[in-house]
Length: 301
Image 1 (cartoon, rainbow, N blue to C red):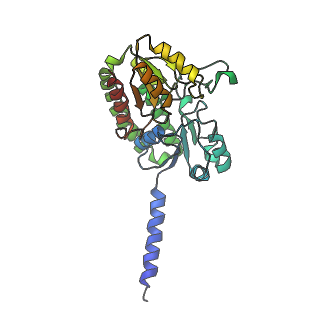
Image 2: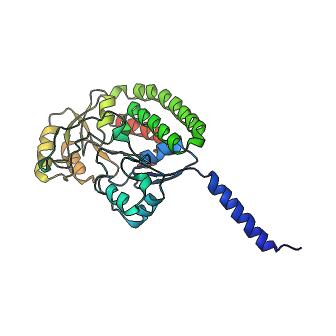
Image 3: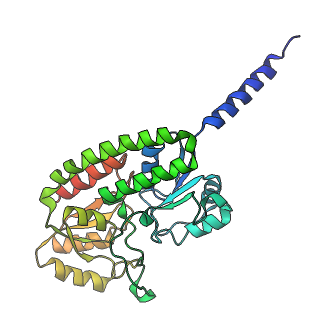
């Protein structure tokens, strides 16, 4: 009996397609690019999607249909937490109707719940602006906290995909070894930054400054979530004239107009730091992100 070659090709394609699907890794939905980058380190065979880029404010994201579709496919959603995504993530969870990534499920993981956050508040009210009672969510610039997160993510990957536990253990071991080896180098390189004072747009780099001994003496925002006003900028100019501030720091997605005005009046440099992987050309992964922010801070002499 002769077999139609096109039919055979189709059957082979279906077979190969089924095989590829069977061995494919998890679908991971990351709320921010730093968690997509971490997932890439820990689950290199996974299909990883980042809902935001380093050029977007993760507080303010539109729950558009494409994000809902990605959330619907996710086996694991990995987010900063501490209510950073409160304005859009619950909508994605509801619209996607994916039980895997509901709060409390194995497939929903908030990094802020895995570590001790900075700046927790006992109570908040609307007069305080956009503050986070559960603590500052921008924890990816604390290298030791981020390693704790990596270990917890690995445990969750193994729970969701037990057949590949050995591979996840090996990936974490490789990441942990490289990460722990890099920390002393970053700290030695940044030693000269200890004691410096800066004005920053927001508390985006709270963990970075805490780690490196940098003091943020004032915010460009009059309150978290509010843009700089002319009156507030005038008060910052008075603060800058004390002469002890070395730079004005802005994250890659933040508006620089207020910073530029203050810089011109006060004679200070404006440093635009990458908020995450992809925030500038140098920040291609978590390691180069840390290299870049430290080098940029050191360049503000």
